[in-house]
Length: 362
Image 1 (cartoon, rainbow, N blue to C red):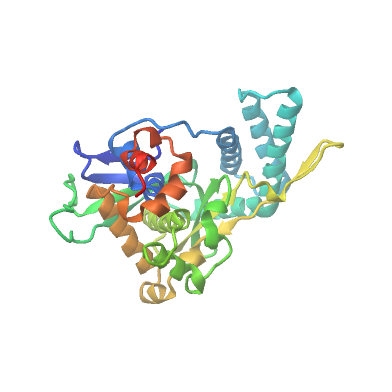
Image 2 (cartoon, rainbow, N blue to C red; image 1 turned 60 degrees about the horizontal axis):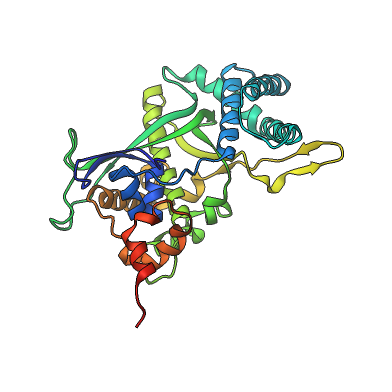
């Protein structure tokens, strides 16, 4: 298992690029990041059948959008036909044919919910953007984006700047969306995810000043009693993707647009209703725009771009720590161990975990 690509120097002290998954790993546990991305060690395999099924839906939806259908029925038919073809080649093992039929119905219901909830509007937005854009791909899945983060000046010789071929004080962060569409004067990047649960407070709040800012800053304050790496990672991801969309807008000749980021969960089962007698499945989707919760309106007033100086500055600090080889989790070990250790595939070789397990009280 590799939890996010990273290009490192031979001694693991510097990196000139990483990806959003690597940031997530580091926020949960710097030592896990070191094992996975610096040492290149294989952890336990965390790939699930849910991931594989989501990939089927992502591919079916993107292929349907690529066909250019904007009529509800036509878009749904194309997407369902594509899913049927992908499902025929899907070699997942099921304990019975009944289970296989049920799981297919769940996927079909999810696809239908996508078309009904946002699919038609998004397809029309893709068509409009295709007509306006001068060049570049708009539909993935896994449409690559990147953001270049300028690192702050090192506080001491213990945190050197990375030695890269280009700007010695910057690191490129890679991310991806599944497609891009136009919504008024905004360009929106959409990413399919299994669930919205990692968003935490971002799932229920849409204003940076209403609790999001406080929780974000408290996470980095050891005395605040807050440790929420998934929530912080979601804000970092939003910052990276929105900045990557700005670069993509420049490539498309649309520099005057604002950029937004939306997540759509494809395995959120809280809204799924199953009738086992009639063998039917109905479900609903909740598309979540993360932009409003990320925007710092003071920064927006200064730049007229969807930015957040607090998040951007903290992101630069964390990337600088990664580039400088700061992988010691001691300062936040109690928080990190309770969050990361229970499902970590590296505990067998983690000196921090082993020392905690064999220590003598008193």
